[in-house]
Amino acid sequence: MSQRADLHDLHEELVRLRHDLHREPEIGLDLPRTQEKVLGFLDGLPLEIDTGRALSSVTAVLRGALPGPTVLLRGDMDALPVTERTGLPYGSAVDGVMHACGHDLHTAMLAGAAHLLSARRDRLAGSVVFMFQPGEEGDGGARIMLDEGVLELSGELPVAAYGMHVISAEIPHGLFASRPGTAMAAADKLKVTVRGRGGHSSAPHRAKDPIPAACEMVTALQTMVTRGFDVFDPVVVTVGSFHAGTADNVIPDEARFEVTLRSFSAEAHARVREAAPALVRGVAAAHGLEVDADYVVNYPVTVNDPAEARHVEATVRELLGEHRHRPMPRPLTGSEDFSFVGQRVPSAFVFLGACPRDADPGRMPYNHSPEAVYDDGVLADGAAVYAELAERRLSAAASA
Image (cartoon, rainbow, N blue to C red; front, side, top):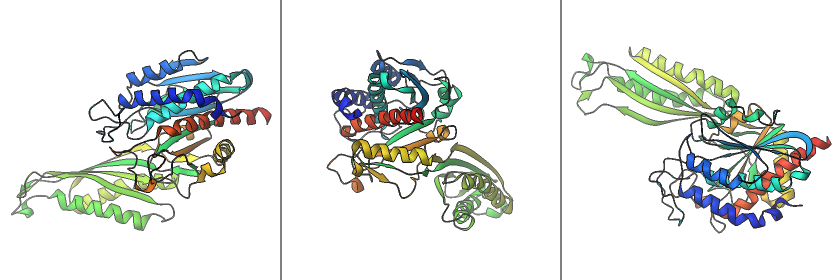
């Protein structure tokens, strides 16, 4: 039987849940209103439910009637510090906060999958862990949930884990996309403070001007990418913040800038972690200046296990039709803390086009935009795919 048929009556409830989440978005690791809504939606299901200690997560274990292994399904719940400009009737009621990345859809779809699989518990060969995660947007909530034991909740490590992410542009409405191997980039941060000695702009020789050295570092970091890394294993370096000085005729004591560094393999990730701080230190030394170079490792590369990626593709094609899955020709340059889950168990991460049905995906605002719009019409299929991935994976393991 198709998960989609079972979901027909549930669809409007998922839409209501998604709209409620969208109206009251929350940021970071502490999402009390979101947690309350999820717990309410799961109430009455045959689940072993727990909440986090260091964050307002929700975890739920569904134990099937038949023996078998464990599969984990993950959905993130946090919003962004963005002021919404969509004009939607259920737009954010919280100033400066918006579900601009579609995590409200992820939460609703995962909750829908919990209802679907609970209704099929009598034929489920194993256990399913539902991981409702705060703090994906830079706070590393997945890593905290791993530390709190989400992978051990059923009594054994999952044989597979699956995550999903909606996209508001580029991917057509209702189309799923995935690939084996690298699916998303690693993302780190480099915070640099160049320390000199201030003085009058008319006598730079009496000061130690940090600005030219900082500018040279910015340029040298770009050259490092083109001359130090393989073009087929790329690194992306972007200086997004640069601050120095207070007036045109004053040489400041220091200049500060911040960099994001993205890479697509563990090897490139390790190399850029060493190369970037060494480069800025070398430039500072050449100018006779001091420098603080603080390299912050954020999220590693998101890597899809080849077998699990094939399972995603086959499941979508068989459940929804051949035309509903498209292999990704290359990874996305964004990053995801689902990568921490993928370091522990075989995993796959899949993307779902969620722009309005009649929209041109090439012209729609992208994720994180204050004008990003996500279509409720994908909720049913997203929940069905979540559930089908788990049920089929457990069945395959039981019959192996």
